[in-house]
Length: 78
Image (cartoon, rainbow, N blue to C red; front, side, top):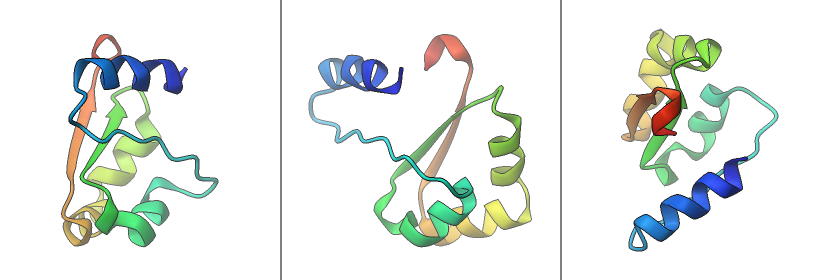
């Protein structure tokens, strides 16, 4: 799962602070509240709901306010 992937990334990039968050609301809501603490959002391209939200007007506004980067990756790169 996510923990295994994060552990692999932590070994590869020990100087990068990596964390996963579990949130019951939408990604947009999470970023609206916690966006200043987020430096990069990584989303799989098959997660169409999240991609659509983030690329739409509300997502654009939240990402701009959060001042974070967005990476949409295909499965092999996650």
